[in-house]
Amino acid sequence: MRYFNTGQISSSLTRTAVLFFLLMILLFWASSALMFFQRMSFDPTSVMQHYLGKPSEWGGPVVGRSYKVMLEVSHAHLFAMGMLLLTLTHLLIFVPVSPRLKIVLTSSAFLSALCNEGSGWLIRFVSPQFAYFKLLAFACFQLSMAALVLMLISAFIRPAGKR
Image 1: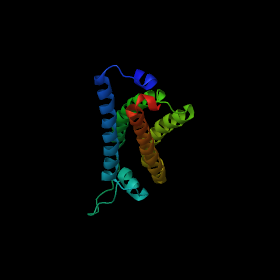
Image 2 (image 1 turned 120 degrees about the horizontal axis):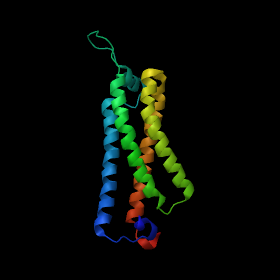
Image 3 (image 1 turned 60 degrees about the horizontal axis):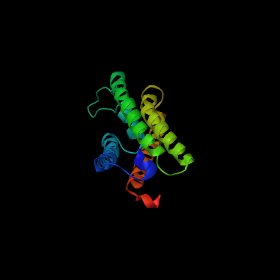
């Protein structure tokens, strides 16, 4: 934390660890997008079929995602996303940018993550039309994560005199 306040870091090991953490999060961000597009496309019909099931080529029953599977995925995602966003937004507090930008980025990251997770439930159990909401939430979450990570990397590698 001291690095973001003063631009000085007492340990090259700490500097290395934080930088590698941020690089790992960039890879997480990229793999999240790849996994999304592995399962569906950026088309509402594709999203609906992912959650509601699609007709079999052989005329079998249409089976959507089960309550149990969705609950297990949400259980893991809510905890992991909460911890990840808490870590990233906590680091953002120490970046020398306007407080308003910090509030906007923090709010958009958490809200889009919640909407992204909740929209699958809405598609499956309320209305397929929430697929549009899912696409919007996913795009906002990806943009928020990218902005957070890139801003942190930029602040981290910027020389102390350039603050």
